[in-house]
Length: 445
Image (cartoon, rainbow, N blue to C red; front, side, top):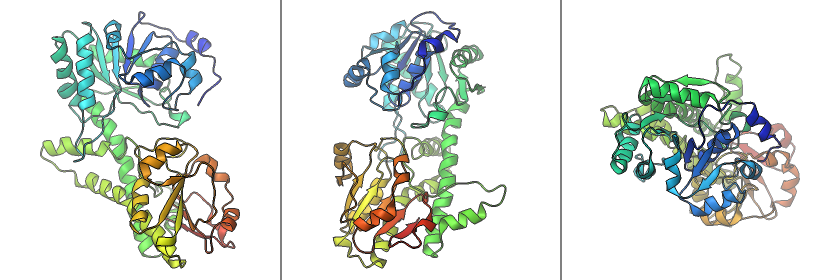
C-alpha cells in the first residue's frame, strides 16, 4: 500500500520537541510498524525493535511483512530496525505493541506483554516512559507490565520510570482510519505523565487526544469499543439465523427496518480478526475475577462463534435443495481473509464454515487474491486456486467481499459451473435482482 507522499516535506511541517533517539517501538506487527513509521514521518528519531530476525531483515530491505504500510514508506523512512534489545536503553519513550491473544480456555494470554516488560527492564534507562498500546484487561498495565520491568531492572515504577497506556485503534486495510486520523486515548500513572504523553501524541495524531482520567479507564475503553461492535453484529447474526429458519430474507427485513431514522445499520457476517473475537474475553475475565459474570457479552460471543457453522449449514441446505449429492459437490469459497482487502487469514472465521462443509464430505476449494496460496492451503486444508476458475463448481460461497470481487459477472460464471449453480452471498453485498432471470440460485444469509 505505497503512497507518493513527500515525507521530507511532511516532516518539515511539524515541530519536533524531543531530543534525538527518543522513541523505541517494541513489536513491529500490524500495529507497531505503522506507529514507528508515523513517528519517524513526524521527525522523531525512532528505533523499531522486534525479536524476529527475519522480519528485521525484511524491513531493512524495504519490505513490509505486514503489507499494510507499504514497501516504499518502509524504505524511505529513517526508522532504525533492529533485533538488538540494547537499542531500548537510548530511548526516552518505549511504546509496546506486542500481541495479546487468548489461550485455549479463552483467558487472556499476556506472556508477550510480560516478556516485553522483562526485555525492557534489562535495558531501560531511568527517566524513561513506557507506553503500552496492546489490548489488555483493566489493571493489567500496572499488574503485569510494571512488575516485569521492575523485576529485571531493579527500578521502581513511578519513581525511576513511568507508565502510560494508549490503546491502538488502527484498522488494517483502512486508509481513512489510520494512526493519525483517529482520536487517540491517552492515559498516565499520574498527571505529569499524562500531560507529557499528551504532548507526545499530539505531535503525530491529527484527529486529537482524549485524556482518560487513569490507566484503567483507558484499558477498559479499548475493550468496550470492540465489545459494542461484537454485540451489534451478534444481534443481526441471531436475526439472520432466525430469519433463515422462518424462510425470510434477512437483508430485506433489515432494509425495511432501516427506514426508521434511529435504526443502526449492521449486517450479518463472519466475525474474525485479532480484536473483536478476543477483546470481550479480557473484560469477561477481569469482571469474573471481581465477582460479576457479564452474560450479554458472553452470549454475543457465543452467537458470533456459531455463525461460521450456520453459514456452512445454509450452504449444505442450498446444495440439498438444488438436488446435489453432498459428497459429490464442490464449493468454491471466494475470499479467505478475515475481512475485505487484507491478506490476513490467521483469525479468519471462514475456517469454521469450511470445516462444517468438510464434515459432510463436500469438496471445498478456495480463492483469494490477497492471500498466499501455499499458506492458505496449509491452514484451511483445502486446494486453493492461483487463478479464479468456476469450472466443475456446484456452489460459490462468497465469504469475503474484496473489492476485486465486486466486478465478477456471476451470471457468466454460472455458465461454467455445473447444473443448478448456487451463489451464497454471506454478507449480502450483491444485488439480488441481477439474478432473478438467471440460472444461478442466489441466496444470502
